[in-house]
Image: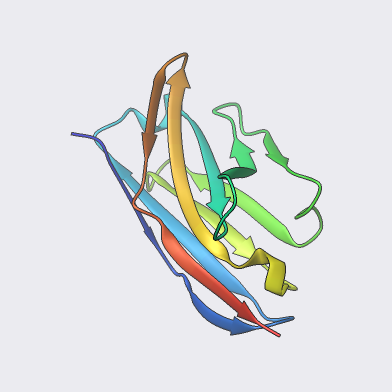
Length: 116
C-alpha cells in the first residue's frame, strides 16, 4: 500500500519560512518522479516543483528563488523549503509520486497559511 505523508505546514507571517516533508512508503522511491503541488481555495491544483529520479529538479516560475525542493532517497523523503513566503502562497500543499503514465499517488495534503 502506497502512503505519502506530508508534515510541516502551519501559519507563518509574510516573509517567513516553512519546511515541508513528505515520507513515502510502499513504492520504489528512487524510481519515482516526486513532486509538490498546491491548491488554493477556489483554484485548481497547480504544480510547484518536480524532483526527477536523476536528481534534476524543476521549480515553477512563481516560486523560483524562494522555494527549494529536494529528495533524500536513503530516507524515502522529499522536502520543500519555502522562504520569503507571500500571502499568495497560502494553499494546501500535496506530495505526489509517479512512475509515469497513469501511475500516480497523492498525499493527504498539509495546510500552509501566510498572513500579511
